[in-house]
Length: 313
Image 1 (cartoon, rainbow, N blue to C red):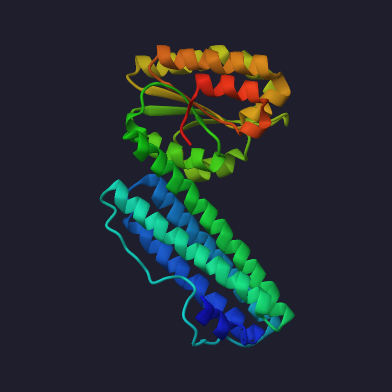
Image 2 (image 1 turned 90 degrees about the vertical axis):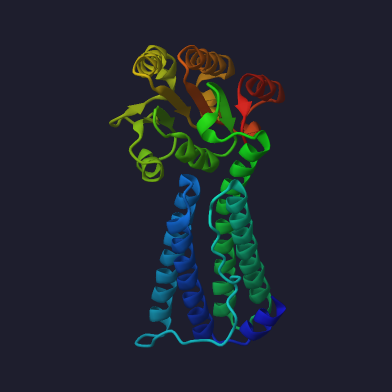
């Protein structure tokens, strides 16, 4: 890292921007290749997202370059890349996935720390600004990769895979992890009924067309449900789980951001709603999957919640 920074710190803004452009371009190509060879849906989606984001960052940097240096092209800089040398695993085992993700996390952290160090020693204001922005980008990449790593690690420690989880109710404390979990979880013969707080279009972009998605919102829009009406959905959810069971499928009910639901219904009514769906899921051989963060609940409330829902990660 020091060798790279020593070479980067004396670069002009034009050279630093050029270096960053080619670095993001190579990173995009690297993650695209990993996405092509990965078989696990969550990891494939993760690497595709990393590739797309790196490509978007490259395009953003190119626009900045064009604004600052109109009519010119990025120049090649004789400095080693901040990403480590490409590593292409076979993705034949859980160990392969974990090793690849560890490698990518180390690479992103190395890049982040390099750019942070560069921002502290660069002699040009514009160079410092670009370096700080690049460090933030690499930190975001690291955190996204870590989500999937921790999720796969959690299942490995249980000696179980998402596909063979027993019927019941499960809790994740991170919405990002939940989306990746659902990618690995929602194979035939499982059908999804999702109640989400995020933009349902963005949710579908990652999950795909795998079931019905309702938007939990007070906004009056298509396929939406206001939070105060959730208890009224019990019969509909019951019909969904029972219908899946009668068709030889497993129904999956996903409720995103239980903390928000609690702010609208109160803890007791929220708990009653969750436990009723949990019992329906067990009765009909299905699943309830929810996301919630402990900070949204009192200590006693969180203890009750985690005693009824199995914490995945």
